[in-house]
Length: 222
Ligand code: CDP
Image 1 (cartoon, rainbow, N blue to C red):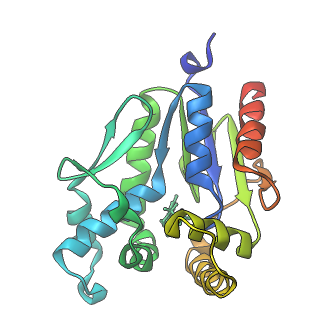
Image 2: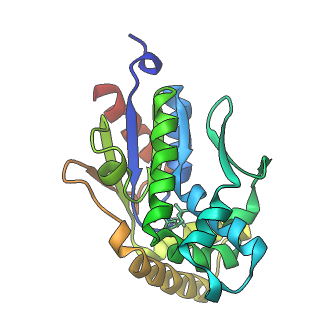
């Protein structure tokens, strides 16, 4: 049976900027199945709440959930696109204000339940590659293949800056970004879970294509 008909779930987890989403997207393309990014949902809920109120002091669980109701997942040809009030969300998802507040939103258990339900619903529509921090544990404990991506903080910082600045970052920029990543890792510690049966891939010395290739091979054997 072709892969796309077998309803498989490949779950890719890992810390901030470990390359989960870009890798998951490529793996899904290679396998000819859909991709869904759980981090984008946490980010979209944060964007929705930010549009009402820029200071997080008044952010109650109920107010974040009410904002999240305006977020939906739209199944396109290759992925589940995150939309707010029916409009696709692009770069805004990765703005600094969103990154600064998303961990707070992600700590709210009802928000986690909302994301997890949407992710499970997406997987009911066909085979899927999902990425986040707890896909292989809380959300898809029965996933066919679980990957946990790691990379050293300076390398993660370098890649994130290259993506954001579209040029090679300087040494002091890397140092500052590595520190910011470490702080976010700490904030996300409780929700970042490595499944006991996950395959750990350290991507510090791998190219993106190499890590994609490894995961595709594992998926085809799973
Ligand atoms: O790509 P990056 O690691 O920067 O983050 P992301 O995948 O876009 O996720 C953004 C934030 O959402 C994380 O910092 C976590 O706070 C949260 N998140 C989570 O708690 N659980 C997930 N499954 C995915 C993301």
